[in-house]
Amino acid sequence: MKRIILSFSIMLLVFSSNAQQTASLLYHWQDTTLVDSGTPHYNTYNECWGVVINEREFAIIGSTAGTHFFDVTEPANSSEVAFVAGAYTGTGVIHRDYHDFEGYLYVVCDEGNTSTLQIIDITNLPSSVNTVYDSNALLTRSHNIYIDTTSAKMYSCGTNGTMQVYSLESPQNPILIYSYNISVHDAYIINDIAYLNCGGNGLIIEDFTMVDTIGDQPTQLASFTSYPDAGYNHSGWLNENKTIYAMLDENHGYDVKLLDVSDLTNISVLSTFNSGVDPQSMAHNGIIKGDLLFISYYHDGLRVFDISDPLNPIQTWEYDTYSSNNYAGYKGAWGVYPNLPSGNIIVSDMQTGLYIFQCGPPTSIIDNKLLTNVFPNPATSQFTLTNTHAEILTLYNTLGVKVKEQKLNTNQNTIYKGNLANGLYFYHLNSGSTLIESGKVIFE
Image (cartoon, rainbow, N blue to C red):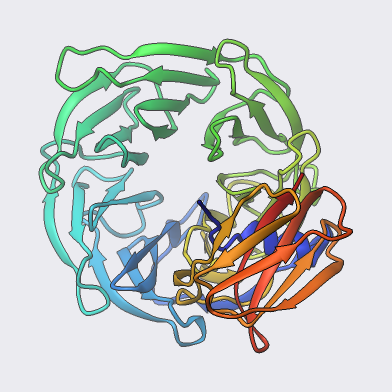
């Protein structure tokens, strides 16, 4: 039985019909008392992250002062609920980075001789946080970290030309197990397969399955260095099917690339695209969620692309967080996090702080607990809904046109194909006028 979970991308397709729209701003925070980093970036803020703790949503943003925690469960009533000072603070700070694992937030900074790895227990949010580890015994500075939650390993991409791999079998006590002597700027890792964004050396893919102790060696699966607009491969993200990799070269005017990585012996570029705003526009960080690619596009702010057809990505949503038309340097939207259950999107802007956005119809974290069973899917002549809390099902085609509406009960409901053509359809489940769940179904 296939369970269909609330799909942010589906709502986007139904309501936008592939037309670019402005995202709705739900919340904005900026603290003008915080210092900026001075020339050349003048940034006060850096990376953002998101977590769900005790059935509430939290946004996390780094600043020159440290790490700020916001309860954003009800965006209009968002507030800062906790703060942890950085081991190194002040005008020298440009980069902080975050990842969470097993109820802990891992924090690094890429500046200062007094910087540390911080591990913060976040399980008591929104009441409090507790720093359980704050030491430079393992590392002082790190540019980016990524935690492979499937294998309990943390990858630290540093500034000294190496990448360190740590075991998190004991989450409060990381253990160094490997040093990778190739310069890695950022990484995406799942099931020990590491997609390494190596700056001018392009994309390298390594298998770390057998790397558990000092002396073990990874196996290189691929190296991809020749591609259009090849510049400084800054960051990337893999889709859920592990077939598409979005690669972002951090160069003014360079396109984003979608790579076919379904066969690692034959990686190819499926498409290149950009925000379409300025010849000097530059993508920074991106995350794929479903069929959508969310990008913090520096001077152009939040940009969202529908990549359901990877040969023809379409920009669907935007919000410019940076008002200046000056494209020199590195300013504007730094990070994006679209993985909150509500579908709300966290964005950090280097100069103007924290943003919470909404693309499409409003949802809440509570809505996503109402998971309706849809079976079979794909369907031939009919499908059934069970365990639904909705009163009405509305079915839309891929153009966003309503093709069927049916009242529901709380037990089992049969939805018949009737005269509908084979293909993909999107359903909305409503209680009164409130959308409580949505998903997709295929007739074949």
